[in-house]
Length: 473
Image (cartoon, rainbow, N blue to C red; front, side):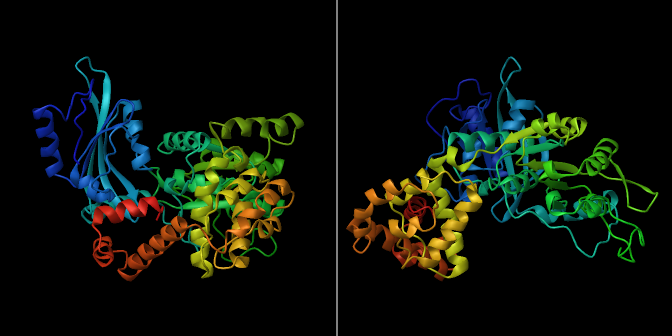
């Protein structure tokens, strides 16, 4: 489907109008996909090329969905909010980098009515000479024995559809293209580094380094050298060649400062100066080094309380608290637990070489009833232990109770009868499990070639996509 039979009031380009549709098709013929959204960033038209690029099933109609629901890294909303075009940008979708252009649309009165996105796919090689030349001109020649790490996560890895997670994803997508400092607030284990990496991944600095440092894990005597570097012989035991600090490693990229609330007051003052002046000096040196780094800080502490207690500098707090984002604890979004259980369980099962956990409603209820003081990190630990001890992926309430300290024994006991069904699951569940395994086997056998897998399974490609969505593959 390349459009909808519904009209698009307020849009200057209306796919229902022949002239508008002809223009959209002409634009689409010059690129690898096009997308039209209204002023609320809801999809009003998508080209067939873009559907194929996103691997949408033939019978799936995205009309009315928010753009971020279809493309997690979409910046169409930013174009609508600012009214500014993005003439050339890079957007990552799965394993591919897309060259994209985003244009705001206005109605007859000049008001923003939507946005048009054009995708130039697989044209990145043509830009490589320009990008390489720009990088050589702009990036400092920094040599390091420990090259900076790159991001592993994007917004697609933020699992959950609860109101709290949808709000977080939307807020993070809004701040990602900006260059201001971000402060991530949340309990331990809520995924602050994942969010930091996703923001970097969706920013204009995505091609530059993402450097992370846990300030709480370093003694006060070393944190200055870690952040700003040290000249040769700056202190006893220092590297005879000197060392490059995290600020220099993150040049033109993003520096993630985790557990910022644990930093000593002396280190706080030096960090404040670096943020204000955008300059650093290596330990034991007197040369001023300009740095272009976006800082994302994170803490599980209450910084306002630390400021009141005098253990955290108020001027540094205000410098960091420009774009605060609150990460919800797991206990406040229990509806996300089934999706987290499946995603984390599938990933760990592949790593461990064991059978995936079999889904049960009682298991979801039991996990949702737990308060999760360690949040996602604790959930991952519990899932890993269940995978190691479960028989062919089957979990009993008694086994679960061994790994959830203080969990609701009443709930577990009330579901003892459910464990009796684990030996012989209902027929519908067994058939669904067999279908899911057959699809996974076919995809593995065909090296993830979905057209070939569909032929081996004896079904259409559209049916394969529908079944993959059904089983969340």
